[in-house]
Structures are given as structure tokens and as C-alpha cells.
Image (cartoon, rainbow, N blue to C red; front, top):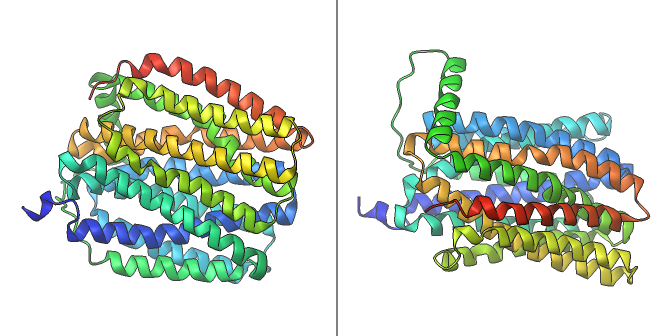
Length: 411
């Protein structure tokens, strides 16, 4: 029992290392596949639609993943899904050039994002089992920053490799990463108590979701407000960054692939700096979380201003890159705070489902936003600042409104 009270116990370290390897493979794929599609087709609308389609399975399977995570050994989920991901990428690698690019990418990205949606609830639900409650904020911050660290290193390397060698080496490295991660995760021990199941899988899923909804409605209705708030914010702001960053840098500013990779790394470096959350958590009151959303909104506004002023391309590039760094940093602080709040105020048997619900509903807005912004960037390709202005102003209004919600939160 003494070992379980330590933050850096063996099993938690193995989870962290497994996440570093697996998420690095994921990061280079998330950089290369959509970017390859944008470069090959040159269509912002098609890019937004394909990206949106990719996110839909993630939203659905996040809920399914939460149900499975609460009833199945979480280690087994990680191992199986990493092996399956390696197989999918291998099939994609062998099919590239032999199957039409659009359906191939849609299917591959939907599968990969869907697996990611089912995978993360298992990781999030395992943290309270491996880390003592007084170190939960730090544990969450470490897992979150592992993600951003992988996303910091991955795009930087992937951008260089992509420009000089194309997509094939990236696919091969990702296959190796997922395979190695799956093998290593076999040796992780995560406490698991098998729960009896006297009805079918569908009935179990229905009952589990009902339990989650009942808990949220009766015990923590404020969580519902927070979840829908984040959903709307993702629809308006997160989607414009996901779709807009590659379009602005590659198609509008005409920067080389290496600089786009650098911008993606800067985005993740900003998230990595969110590790400060673990240090300032006691100073940042929950009722003031709206200020973090406000900072994200202003960051996008400054990107739009740089485009509106028609500054030299390299100057606008640096404004966009730095503002992405800032937006990602404060949004990471926001996410860690919300995750910790939910985990500490949710019964253990419901953590996986509630976390999955939070993630799934919060992401619901992104696919819609990605499709809309893809079309808008096509329409306003000569005046992209218009899209950035609209997104930022709407986000500022949402941020100000969110102050009422966060004032009702308790820790």
C-alpha cells in the first residue's frame, strides 16, 4: 500500500512511458495524414470535411470507451488498441497509391481517431487507481503534458521528414511506436475488480449511461453546464485552430513544411508549459477559469489582426505561431483543472464514464465547426482575417458568459 501512495510508482511510470511512445506515434500521424491530404488536394473545404468525419468516431467511441474502462482491465484496453492501431497503419501503408486517396484517408482517419477516443478514457480512469488523491492534480498534469510533449517533438521531426522524404517513413516509425508501446504495456498492473454482468452488453451500456446521467443530473448538474460550455467553445474556437492553422501557414502564407511542423510544435510547447497548473492550482480559483478562455479568444483575435494588416508573411507566421503557443498553454491549464475537479467529485465506479462523457460531449462541437470553417476558409481564402475575427469575437462573448457558470463551481 505504501508504494501506491508514491506518485512515481512503477506502474504509473510505465503508463507514462507507454503514453510517450504511443502518443509520439499518434502525433506524427496527426501531423502527416491531414497535411498530406491538404497538400495533395489543395481544398480547404475538403480538408475540413474529412477532418470533421474523422472526429465523429472519436466522439462516439469516447462514450463507449468510458463504459468499457469502468468494467474491463484498463491495461488490456491499452495493449489491444495499440496493437490494432499498428495493424491499421500497416494496412494504410500498403494501400497508399493503390486506393483512391479520399476514401482511403476518410476510413483511416476515422479508425485512428475512433481508437484514440476509446483509448483515452482508459488512461484517464487509471490515474486515480495509480495515484493518491492528494497527488491527483500532479498526476493529471503529467499525463496531459506527456501528450503535449509528444505533440511538441512529433510535428517538428515529422515536418522535416515530410518535406525531404515524404509520408512513408512517418508511417513506418508510427507502426514501430504503437507495436513497442503495446508490448511494454503488457507489464503494467492496474488494480481491477471485475464487476458482475447479468445482462447483455447493450443493456450494460444503457444502464451505465443512465447511472452517469442520473449522477450528473441529481448530484452535479453544474458539470452538465460546464460540459456544454466547453462543447460550444470547441465548436467556435478550437475548430478554427485545427482547420485554420495548416491552411493559414501552407495555403495563405505559403510557408514550407518545416515551418508548419515548427508551428505545430509551438502549439504543443504551449501545452507543455501548462505543467505550471500543478504549481499554481491552489492559486487559480475555479470561479476565475473564464479568464483562461478569454485569453484563448484574444489570441485568435491577434492572429486575425496580423492577417488584416497584411504584414509580411514571415511576420504574420510568427504572430500566428506565438498566439497558438499562448492559446494552447492556457487551454491546457483549463483542461487539467476541469479533469481534476471531475475526478475528485465523482464516485470511483463512475469516473471512466463521466470522464468519457465530458470528453465526448466537449468534442461534439468540433466536427461541426471543422466543416463550417473548412467551407468559410474556401470562401474567404483572400480575406481569412474575416474568419478569424468572427471566431474570436464569438469566443470572447462565450468566455464572458462562462463567468456565471464557473462562479457556481465548488472544490
